[in-house]
Length: 364
Image (cartoon, rainbow, N blue to C red; front, side):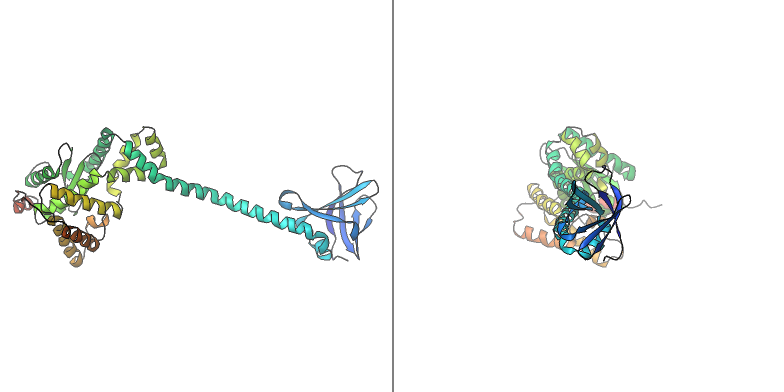
């Protein structure tokens, strides 16, 4: 005999669709059914059939043939345990089906949970190829507008040096590096950071701290060649588009470039990949060779910074926060320079001591 009665719903062959409350218990090899409003029934276990039913097999149906047709009991899964314990064979097939359903349901729930994550991952993977496609189709006029937005942000953050030997030297070096037909514009910002950056549309900004640190015009030419390479290779534009987000990218795919300008103003917060930096270094060395500028200046500048980095107690120069590690970069430059002859070089006619002196505070 089962320990406690099990609640169920009893549906006699000629009864209504709502059924009747009943209590069930095993007694020997028989199931005792005690409907609330009719006489009790005693059914042999051999006459019974049981199967899991309902959503996610959350109910059990126990049926047997009788006078007038089939009798039916519906029992909630959470209440069926005493009956299953007493007659496991009766419920074996239904339990197997129930297990399969629960497993499928669990897999379905897992899939529903993972689906948004997979969609996000798919979108993330799609951003770079979509961004590259946008970059390929952005017209030069839009690229120039983005560069102007970057420059406007720079003017807010820093004072631009509008005249003097340092600016003249920067323009001379830039003109020497520029190829025919290139629209490159060079600006000198009064900031102590040892840094420079390139923006879309040919905007190159150099900080006065870098000019003070460099030992020659050729050193600065090496840095400028690297930044011009970023412009040529459209690294800045590509990075702006990639960071802009899918909505802006999709808008740009349909020719709406309005939001890219505001993103461009955040250029100073972007970082290039190491591959992009190495590519800019290599392309910069090519440009130095074309301009007949000693390419050792690029190497010399980073060697100077490396020595300062090893002895300084202050923060690492800004230029290192967005570029490959100094030792790695120097090693790559040395190998590249060793593979190419220097060729004919022509000095850049600049009095560098006078340039650096012009950036020192005026004596009172």
